[in-house]
Image (tube, rainbow, N blue to C red; front, side, top):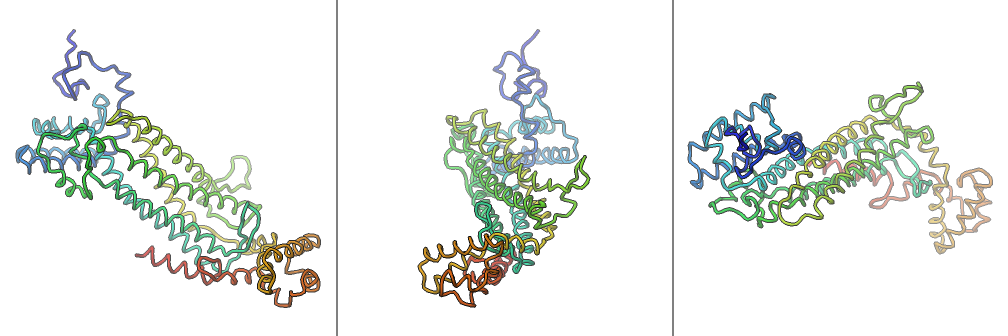
Amino acid sequence: MSSLPSSDPLANKAQAWSALFSEPMSELVKRYTASVGFDQRLWRADIDGSLAHAEMLAAQGIIGAQDLADIRRGMAEIAADIEAGRFEWKLELEDVHLNVEARLTALVGDAGKRLHTGRSRNDQVATDVRLWLRGEIDQLQPLLRAMQHALVELAAQHTETVMPGFTHMQVAQPVSFAHHLLAYVEMFARDAERLADVRRRVNVLPLGAAALAGTSYPLDRERVARTLGFDGVCQNSLDAVSDRDFALEFGSFAAITMVHVSRLAEEIVLWMSQNFGFIDLADRYCTGSSIMPQKRNPDVAELARGKSGRVVGHLMGMLTLMKGQPLTYNKDNQEDKEPLFDTVDTVRDTLRIMAEMVGGITVKADAMERAALRGYATATDLADYLVKKGLPFRDAHETVAHAVKLAIGQGVDLAQLPLATLRGLHPSIGDDVFSVLTLRGSLNARNVLGGTAPAQAAAQIARHRARLAG
């Protein structure tokens, strides 16, 4: 039996690159090395990159005008077939690139074979991933804005709503619910800045580096970059085909963003629990129990919290993937696609559903205020009051500790201690102390930039609205 590959380019995978091989690839190896099952989502980027490359080859006189016309015609037919679900993805052709190229050659003949002049799958895949990721980044930015917008609009309704602020999960000081929500707006705003920064380094063209050393053909790489909307070209061919920093940076952005999501989700779970009772979620974001009919479980928030671990894990996987690779391209890099794809999908879906869920939150302001009264949250205000009366802060701190101890013993709030009792702790305490010891007095006293006073929260809301509208 002959061991030579078939003349049909689709019949034997070895034919896709060389007649060197004397036996066909085993079926197990085909399955193990194939990526077409997941990298076919790069098809549009692959076609766009190929068309830009073909136009440049024609402009440089490397291929003829008829070749370019045939390539354009063939690619249009392939794109239409893929969009219509008619395209047959073949495992033996390993990846999206060879599948598209083989179909193009079947449609237009030699012009399809000439398309690969001056490039390699190494620089081709790097280009495809960058093109695809750039498009995904451009879709994520509006979702980050929507997440911030949902938080800002909820905050706008609650600048006067008092809740306990916590350190170590212990009641610390009263804050407005608006101020608490705006902390997450700051986090997601930083995420948006990081994403914009990542995009700059994604948007650099590797095409033209060929396999690793560049090419002897007179390519115009800058033309291709302009055609595809890249800001520039990779300056070193070895780095161009082996660099995956841009994917790692995106993974880092995604992991940090999902940590922020997870922190918010954790608080939503806590706030909705009966022990807190601060909020209700709309039924469409909850599930029931198969055995306990009274349950309304915040499954969406819990799952968002859980998915943060998935995205962080993908980042760790990609970092580990890259750490031992010598220059230049290695087959290991095939393993960057699935974690990167899943990271994009997870962040996109999570941001969308979290923004919608935040928009459906019902706030139980009375429960928040009652909780703020339970932990002597105005103790620091009493210490500040004594400092303004002339005591050193450490002495004021000690005096207030005694006051809290008395209040605990009597089972009352600081504001409920008699004036005589308070004066017994320090004679400078007067009637005006009671305005300091109220929750709203505490809020209003912190009218400094970045503080929790309602006036400051309103100013921050106005700032964020203007920023997000810009």
